[in-house]
Amino acid sequence: MKVGDLVKLRAMHRRQKSRAGLIVELVDKKCWRTDMRGNKVDWSKIDPEPHAVVVVNGATLTIPLTDLEPLDEDR
Image (tube, rainbow, N blue to C red; front, side):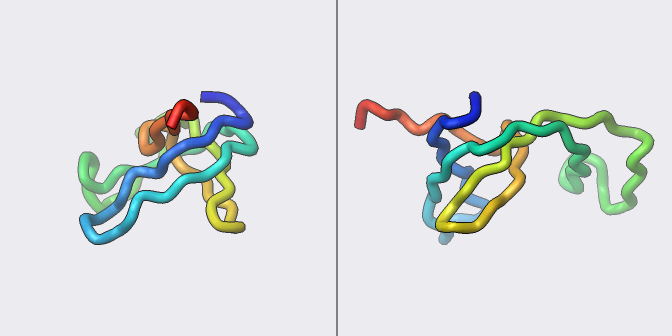
């Protein structure tokens, strides 16, 4: 994915509708995944991973690339 791509955000729960956004920047950030590593955070144990700064409904969100899907422009 790259700046300018349209993406779909993965729904965080069943009732949430899928949302689309526009990537405006790519950054590296650390992300502690409690489902895999538990609740006790130790930032020294993880490396930064790629994130996208995405504009969704006027709000700017920073989301890991693994939680985004490219939006098919042919639809």
